[in-house]
Image (cartoon, rainbow, N blue to C red; front, side):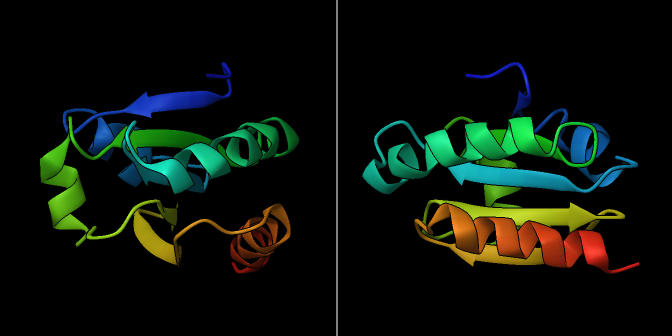
Length: 111
């Protein structure tokens, strides 16, 4: 995993995501999930592209069920973008890079 992508946990989610000054892109995933593995390289690329503007993190839903349940994650991958501690955008399933980038740009464009 790229050094631009942080590993999120139940214990550090509030600090790393909800209290972040930057928007945070969170990939809710699991190692056994095929579509999750499909979007992983896209997320790595976007982590590099948006470095310094958006924080990127991955949360393994098997290892961190409290956070996954609190956000109603029932399908993975679920991609959420948090801004000011709130969910600003959500994509469920594997999406092409163009669509994920569009979601990030929309969040960045809103005050």
